[in-house]
Image (cartoon, rainbow, N blue to C red; front, side, top):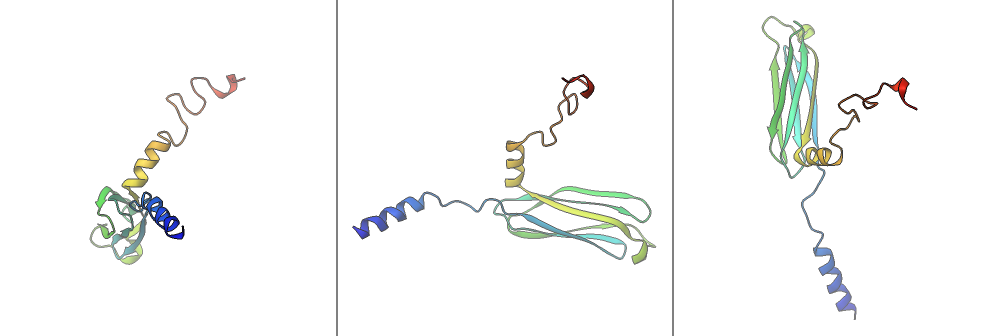
Length: 132
């Protein structure tokens, strides 16, 4: 009887084996002299994308959007703010983030409109003072 229970348990558990869902892409953005640098790591079994944005000391905005990253791998993005910048007036601000294919699919499936705004704004076709 014990052998049958152990065999049944093994068979039941075998049906739940799947790829690890919900891994994440972690990023760290920092300045190195006149460059903005982002180091990102994808810990998911699916590919993803990484975005680096920021503002240079000469007020130039930069953006590297949706750069592909392979599953379970690191990537480094850099943006040069130009010549003549010292470390004190290089990038003023830099931000980096990533989104795995799994996260993107589940975000789109669960809530295609995450802010709740329709074509007429948050209150529908009527201004808020006309609602009952």
